[in-house]
Length: 273
Image (cartoon, rainbow, N blue to C red; front, side):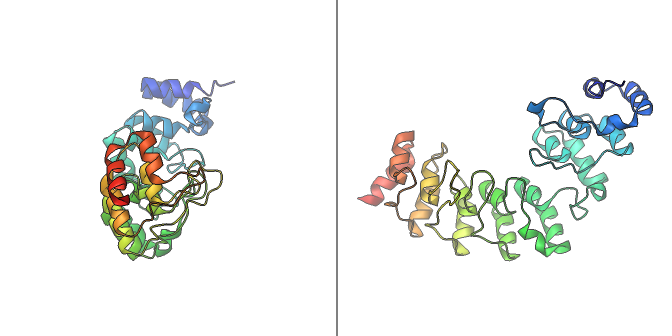
């Protein structure tokens, strides 16, 4: 019986000849998953991409590996390569074989993740090829607007809003919250765009099992370590109510003081007085 986990050792070693021999003897090893739950049972291609093994990625794809694996507890190979800063591997997926990534409109990556990474040109392609893609959900229930709002990709936020993205949509599987909640952590440009589009400045996170249940964007801003007082001021100027409390019975000022967020605390105290 083939030791299926051996394939991951060979990927680590980058030994293409031995890897080819293993695949020739048992083609199914291309499709095995890593035994380690801490690696989310990655596929061989996810693992190779994360390790920056470009030649191994090419070999696995040639042997039929699924290019756009996106299980509900992990991210596809191209994103693994992005996060490990393996640009040559990223370019391979996005420039050489984007057409092999199923479910991505031929772009190599889903709209949610392209928007998250700030890839404006890929976002444009999605919106042109599939206007309804603005309503897709990521694996944590995020819309395409949530992550770019969080990451302060203002231009992409604006493009998605113009394409009809729902600015009041709730992320439903993990943290909860609307795009403005996510932007309020530390993304002033996103906050400006969302407020200009009519986002409810006093909206609530409605996910009951979330640590952030009941928070407003202002409270969200005051619970994060970034101490982004620019966002605090934008929210207050737009009508955020600093007297509102969350499910813990705390105001934004309560949270800011507890966390030692000096800049946000100063703004809130000045606003109250």
